[in-house]
Length: 295
Ligand SMILES: C[S@@+](CC[C@H](N)C(=O)[O-])C[C@H]1O[C@@H](n2cnc3c(N)ncnc32)[C@H](O)[C@@H]1O
Image (cartoon, rainbow, N blue to C red; front, side, top):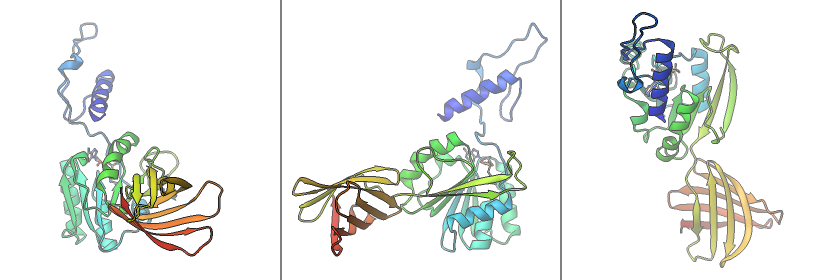
């Protein structure tokens, strides 16, 4: 996908007769006799897929508030520009931050601004492609990228971030992965767009619960089908279908209830890798403890 984006960008640049940094076009010549380079002869261009556009400081503050950033958090900003999100997270919220950025001059600028803000020990910047970055230690990930880049990143976010990690995207969504919260904030100093507002979306990375789970005596089986944070489940007792449940998984917190029109069934659980500690109440009865293991 990324190669395709680069090839398309290269084609557009050629069509427009433009030259981008890092791309040398041996075009030129008089009209009529112009020898344009064949596409195949263009070297792979180190294009930045996402242009540098600053998030206004008031919107940075709103992003960090939406993510609930606090001391102890480890924030990664993917495509960190001048480092303002990482620096503000360190200076105002006491978090540790890592900015990932392709452009070396922006890394230099970020390091200087972090020193001037007195947070160089908690705000680090690395010149790296965000797709090559290890995200596993983050408790918060922020990004101001583009829709197709968000979609390309989505599998990595879901597979490598710990359940409960908060992800905030400025302006762009994540396709079918519905945001858990969304706010629109004023952005009077925004350098792009006509509306002068920013849409901020928050996702809580869901624990992975897809598949069958059973109790230790293997009498109850809960088979879950997960689509991002949404869950549908079939509850079986001694192999017989009992109830059809639906609900959500927010971080490690699983909430299911009956969706088949029968008497109330409610299951509240905490997901821990290969086990779920839960409480199950059926037909309005008192909740009883139910420990489930991956089958
Ligand atoms: C829209 S700017 C956002 C800057 C900053 N996060 C902010 O909100 O002010 C996107 C940034 O991502 C950087 N970028 C683009 N593609 C990247 C990649 N593949 N890896 C790392 N950084 C990238 C760009 O250089 C640019 O600085």
